[in-house]
Image 1: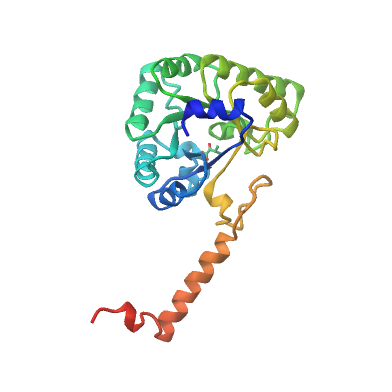
Image 2: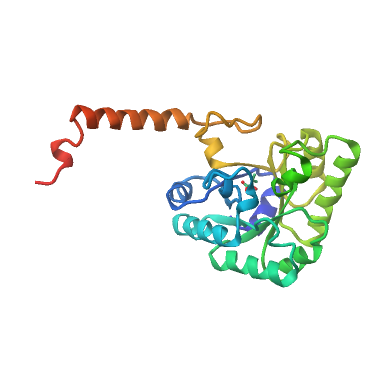
Length: 262
Ligand code: KIV
């Protein structure tokens, strides 16, 4: 997959699957999977670093996670997130930050929103950097919303999201993440665009879907947003494995002879 194949997939009516990934071990597993694309999301700040929002992600953090994923998932299409404010401090600063992520091995970058940084999106596209948009709930604006809330429920807010989607397509974005918007709105936006929409909490009418890998694997039973279907009870699997190890150590059955050097 690559950014132009994303467009072809939409034209041919093929759905796209994406997951987030932040580390080498999972990237290696993803490279053996049929998943179409990997997002090195700034959700790394929450999922990997335990912060309450994505605001703590820096370009340096994203570089380190991007490099780890690139080492594990050679051959996969990798998009790296531009962190909070990194694309709002002027064109040169935005290009410097994007350059760090692309040199780290990303094949594209993702930016939240569009209003006020149209020039950044356009210059990146003109510079050969595929740009993925991200509208609807923009987690970097969590404090402006007063929490992680569904966006686009009112007529005005829905129309605003439609306008942003159109603007991103016109500026040359190759795809758009639609996060936490009503399914009808996401379906209408998807139908009106040439570029694919990748939904998260945006219903089945999007051209593809993305989930945070740890949510998909059910690694945290205490965090279950409505849209995040766990495809595995990862928390239970991991806890069972740890309990088995603990029991074997304490019973003296681990390590066995064949797990020891003569
Ligand atoms: O950082 C992230 O995980 C994301 C997804 C929610 C799309 O941006």
